[in-house]
Image 1 (cartoon, one colour):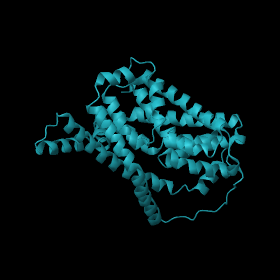
Image 2 (cartoon, rainbow, N blue to C red):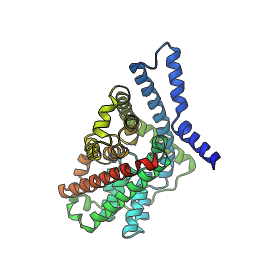
Image 3 (tube, one colour):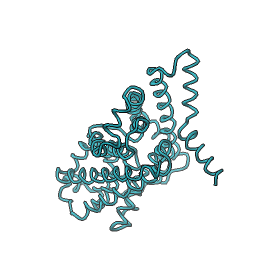
Amino acid sequence: MQIIKIIWDFFQSQILGMKWLNQVIGSGLSALGLDIANRWVASAQFFFYDVIKITILLCTLIFMISYIQSYFPPERSKKILGRFHGIGANTAAALLGTVTPFCSCSSIPLFIGFTSAGLPLGVTFSFLISSPMVDLGSLVLLMSIFGAKVAVLYVVLGLIIAIIGGTIIEKMHMEKHVESFITTAGSVDIESPDLTKHERLIFAKEQVIDTFQKVFPYILIGVGIGAVIHNWIPQSWIENVLGGGNPFAVILATLVGFPMYADIFGTIPVAEALLSKGAQLGAILSFMMGVTTLSLPSLIMLRKAVRPKLLALFIGICTFGIIIVGYFFNAIQSLII
């Protein structure tokens, strides 16, 4: 058992966390005659380390997930979801969301397509909630910082929010609050051709290039913010605002995430820096969920597809669920970290 733990710790810290890379960058800066204890140099070390680490993880994960995703084009996904009913359909939709693109803005076109195809509204909302919040990438990235227990719980609770949220919307019969151009659009049921292994590899490579070009600017911004938090903002400030002494830290962190736009890769460096400064685990994870699920650009896009009442319900369900998850993680933080 001890051997398994040693192997796992090595995998988490050196493979996923790439601690060796941080040491290499630190040694390189020292070899240039720079003092890594200096704030500017330490910020540079944090920046280079996180950008390189996240880029490697980003490209690897997108390639793997895109290859899996090539087996689930919209037509096939629609047929799969159409086989389920009730809460089983919501669960299937939430699980399907884990193998789709990383950001909420990328998920909305698929949500519109599924809704136009006649899938139940609650089912399509379960997909829309889970897709940006709990993709497979989030599991691996969270493991690299918080460990396996936190990562698995984050994904499970995110799926629960998606399933419950979609079920509530379904029970409230909100179909009349979907814009008419979507409900009357219909869809052409075209069978997707089977791809060869080579074609799937090409698809995955193209997805890596396309997603990297879209996401990389936000990675730079996120890492830059993380470097500032890590090396320039006093720990006492973070503890006062997001630490255990503030009972409203989770709510504040959730609301702060709304105006931002990033995916899981952009929020990881900020989360990493906040954790090192003493922020509550629940506040950090609520911030990440808020940014990835309820970013302002994605809500603006969604407003074009649904009417204000349904949009407000979606925001309310997600916000309430994220806050509950945040306080839950705070309550068990000492047990899982």
